[in-house]
Length: 301
Image 1 (tube, rainbow, N blue to C red):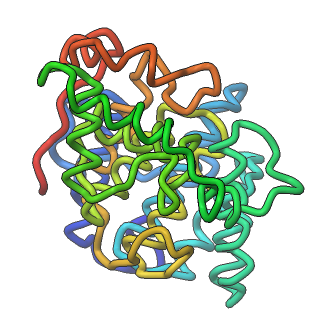
Image 2 (cartoon, rainbow, N blue to C red):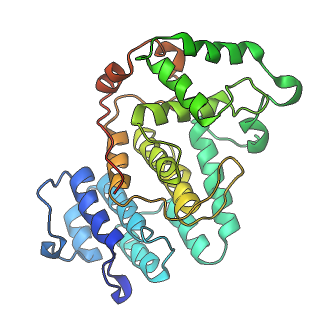
């Protein structure tokens, strides 16, 4: 994929291939990508015959490789589609990429936004206004009792998950759910909790990584609802909404793949509707990381 159209390997290409091999394919021995044999579409078909789940995963990885250099390269995207057709893989994120590359960026980003909304809800968002849903406490809908419940987390012992969540929101100036300016607790709390559990900050790099971690952890629309939107937003600089600030170059080509693997290794899904932060706020943060199989994050590359 990195060599599609006769391109030379970039730094991001090289780091990404090694990182994907190390973290997702568990190839700890991989050090020289020059030693890897070429794999044409027919080769992958032969290797993955009868294994549709692996074929689907392979196309996801190929699609990401078309994006790591910070642009939607038409030759690389065409190569992704060669592999997806050969492997008989159809996916909504591939449609989004094709539409974006065809100049229909508004349609593609709107579709990604809707897929993200569906994923956050863990159900169809049909009939809901995402702008109204994301800020439900405006005007006379403020909930001071809910704000007070979150505020009380500041009184927990320093080592607890709840105190770490309180610190995270205070440090970043985020109002607690119930405040007229706050995001819906149905999104803000699991998202901020994932920041705390994963250890990723709120920089462009950190937001891209926490969404990638979420995609590994939460099985609903991982590519179209989480990974692609943040690549477009924080790596390509395409504004998708008014919740954050778009930026470029946010994809860390090593930790991106690590975040994906770390999220996949989680034993609990913080975006599952059955998960409640209030069941865990008094637990020790490091104990929860061990309990939920959260390995340490890497340093910026």
